[in-house]
Image (cartoon, rainbow, N blue to C red; front, top):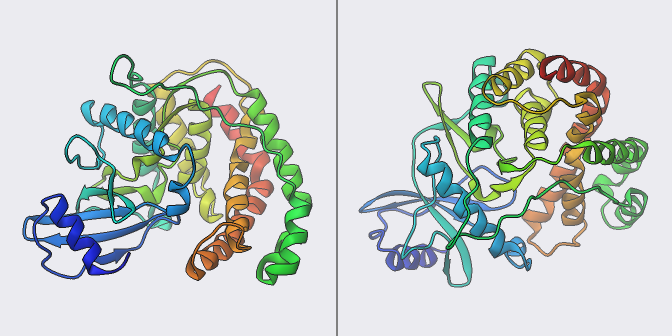
Length: 338
């Protein structure tokens, strides 16, 4: 899909204007590919959706629901970069490739080490605003069901055995982590079981890489993961991420700032927050996906297989780190949210 003729056809089909220079790849996410497209009419960001993801039976319906929720955020004035619509639809398909087109913005994402408590305060408040929005209903809207986290039953020893014969780059690290992974899965499942039955518009993908900034003003991008889900699950995952858990440099001041800003805007029922801390092991699902990608169980290019190997290593380290800090995190989560 790197060929210029694809982008030329895309620009022609959507009346974006003729290309003024070669499309340029943009670094970013680990699932899809993004390009900058400059035309005579302006500049655009084009997201090429992962073919493996789009081959899943529920993919298109999930994206349609996310589009409807994105419209709610846009209509309520939340700071987002929404996909452009063409002939009444946001998702486009050109030469068999599904994609979204966005206006290009000059904001930039923060480096993890540059996040400060003020950013976490802003994001905690923004998450609470998102969770407070009405879920659309009625004629013309998709059917929204609560997407609650499910218990995991991943056979980690079997995966480690499979990796030992086909992927030596990660097999030793995986084998060494087996006790931690099995304990983490149990902790995650206990937390899922303890979640209160709540439902709202959620964006669990609103982490550092998906928020662009200018003068401390955020713009949220990559809204394809919008869903109706559990706000407590969303809050725990994102507060841990913005506090530095993703890069194994946890900052309790940032954690407190995120949680406090959320709590100031939105009230949640009384609950045992300590018992919910295991939600932080949701990285197990991402680890599982990347292990399968690394071992070639998911079709993809050599570059995607290498990304699976790299992400497996990084995610193992995140899980190890969270396991080592879980008790301290649980104490602060309980103190701030109770």
